Length: 485
Ligand code: ADP
Image (cartoon, rainbow, N blue to C red; front, side, top):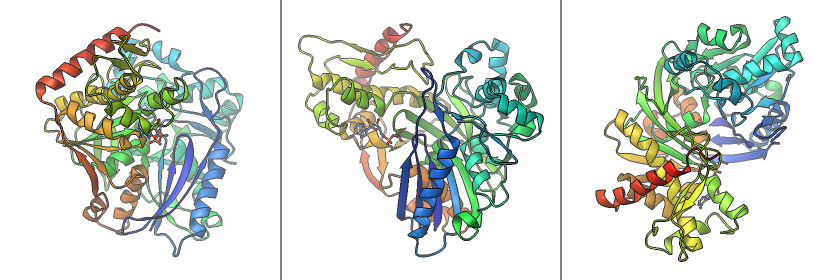
């Protein structure tokens, strides 16, 4: 049995997953989101740690036997600064969503931006850890003092939890998390001195980078009663990719949560594209699998917005039947650029729009347009992935909005490939539990893959002309949403 910590952006969860692939028990706690200024987002590192202990111990108390090991998956890019000697956080964690360093990034020279893209595979953005670390160092006296005393740690959430949970307070991370710092060279899988210099970061402040299935350390027995090996760490999207697709480059995964997180494995090749991120998927037994990734800021949250701000629906679920009331979209489109547009458009000045409204437009048209927009955005990214990795055969989906029947069928129709939803909803946790379980010989990779029985496959129904009619109008709508904010 693998004890899996799934440390998300709004909650921490612990799941016990047995060797037959069943989740025996789960405990979850939400934690506080701090918004000290508009567009700034922070987390309290102590609260995350305390709640992690609580969910971990709650699950441990319910287990019939001792688990074989611990696996950790986590929200990526978020940075915590703490004092090495005492484990005391020196500031609130700066969350991946936080835009406080957007200006700094926009002021980077074109040369530096090109250098970052070429080395890290990432499109320079405040989203990644580097500029958050720089901000903490230059704005926080306690951080400077710790640096002066050689007592400073900057880590992502995996490192923070590992430091606290481990017997020896180890300071480590895995390649998948490290690749999101914007400080790591994809080729060498190590921190790059030029990038460290650019953001004025000292290498000694950062965790050692290990394989994703390394034996990171053992857990502290005061927390887990017995010492347990901590045997896998993966960033959350990489964990979902491992679970849904593994090394199979013919499949693309999409997680329909608050945003949409689309990724595909590219095997041992780093594939650079202009508009998507190249990143490390995982490193297992000294072999690194790379991935192409496109993050879309507004996904399921557009449905939440329709429910909570526009009062068009009272539950997210209702959106499916409402959209199915009409047989086509009557040329009504919605562009969910509520916080600008992410991949592949990367336009922070775009703003949301409904277009094509007439006196005949109903609530059903608006909801349908919102759901369709999730599918078009997915197609925008999948088309670029398909140009780089030909022979894409299916989209594997998970996340809250993948429960939406209308959306899933429309997604298959507009992509022209089947969409498959698996029987397991906790895909992220399963992904990292899989890495740990395979490493500990609890099950083979084939057995692990058999845990994911497809619950439903949506077969595409549109012909090429129909796809073109719908999709070309979407492209027009996106053009009109640009340069508004
Ligand atoms: P996260 O992990 O980002 O919090 P979840 O995977 O829990 O996201 O999914 C929650 C999101 O999915 C919400 O934004 C919600 O509006 C959306 N959602 C949930 N159920 C449905 C549904 N049946 N149809 C459309 N959207 C849905």
